Image (cartoon, rainbow, N blue to C red; front, side):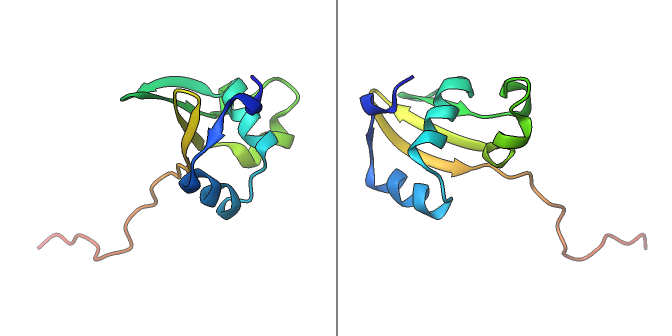
Length: 94
């Protein structure tokens, strides 16, 4: 999927630099990521099983990155991380 067809929103451009991604990285996510409907747009999420055989090591840093598009515009790019357990107070049995 050629990235040239998409316009990038200012928010997505900021996230590109914050996550240290290139346009080529976004093209990989749009091509191989899991496609889901997200309101008025489409969400592409790169998961472990989406990566082609032999490319796992090379594309490992892109795992969990979500690209949200609306029409031909990239609206949002974010990294979905697994939630870590809370480091708050431990539950005690009284």
